[in-house]
Length: 164
Ligand code: ADP
Image 1: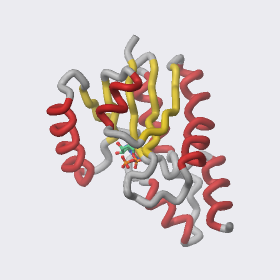
Image 2: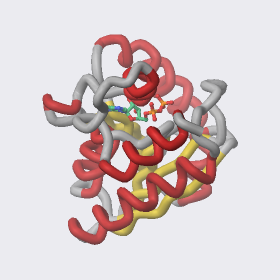
Image 3: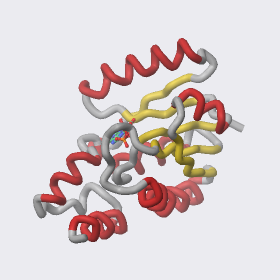
Image 4: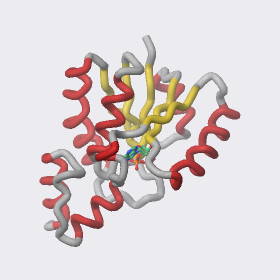
């Protein structure tokens, strides 16, 4: 039984994330989606809201492809979270070169803390590669159409949040 951990902020979950999750499901039997409590990014959505959105979008997706998906909030070290959930693989998505430098350092540091946990990088389908939660929020704030970037339910919640 192979368990993977896909960590992130998911503020909110996008079609880029769900594409990576679908791909990760073909590599592991169980995928734990680690929702970071607050990675210093000052999330727009509360932890509970982010977890609820990830659960609503991803648990059915896992059922479709035969992979158990669990959503797990965490605020400790990523490597400790991986050990806590029994993950042997950390999954990260790679978008552009800009992601690479940070990810490169993360792998190096994590590996020196626990060399038994591997990190694998996946790329989303080309139509989702440029999507970033931060830009989705900016576009929505400026009344742009975010239909192509997030699942419909997430769009509804984001619009409601902005009109609060
Ligand atoms: P983080 O705070 O780690 O950047 P995010 O929620 O922004 O958290 O992203 C979680 C993971 O998903 C990261 O590995 C990120 O690179 C990846 N990711 C996000 N959007 C995309 C996308 N459009 N294509 C590929 N990977 C993505």
